[in-house]
Length: 323
Image (cartoon, rainbow, N blue to C red; front, side, top):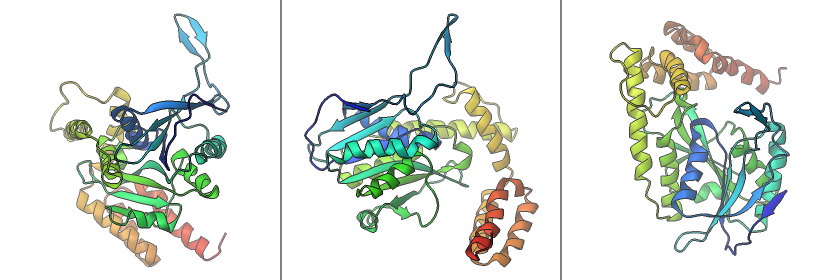
């Protein structure tokens, strides 16, 4: 299942695995590490067992079955920092294959006696794209959380980490390995486009935590560029200006972000903050739900928050054992 091209001698490496996901945070972070630190490929996984073609490619009238997405292992021998093994998956397989694929990867990595397994993910929030994003942490063991106590990460008390970037950690824990997922906040209306700011703060954490020498100024530069492009779209939606010049966002990106921004820009950030506070209040005291509902109706955004609002009652019923 895994073809090994070489067998590097590594000392308790850090294992980092990444697949594409919201904001491209996980994949872009790992890809930058690979390109900037001269990682060397040493193994690859046969992914055709996990990906079944849904269509054929056509070129000049000729059809061909598309190649399955690559899954490649790289290594880096640290001179000052730690040894690192990196896995990059070009795409996430259907979820019914996620646990099996994770098991194969963990079984292969375990023989290198990894000190820590890391994955990354995005955490969509009702924040502005200029907002200073926070980092969150979910780990397999309390001892791992304690390792990050001196960093500026917040502990994720409750929630889910979907896809391979989360499931891999569950399998790792079952196999006796320790690991964590680092989640970077992104505005919910940018979930479907690249978010270099989130990528930069993830990499900045790795630089400081593992004492890695890495220049990420190019990512911060791109983050400013993307931020300005979103500003232009907001101005356009408000009728203040028309977008001009080249854009890093393609037509589909623009359509998606326009749709979500149209809803977002109707409500000032102060109102969003009040809504979030009322959600927290309602979780502790369900009687506050009526005040929350009124606030959502006043701003005409109930549909946007409907699932979260109804979850307040679903979760309450579960706690009481009502099915």
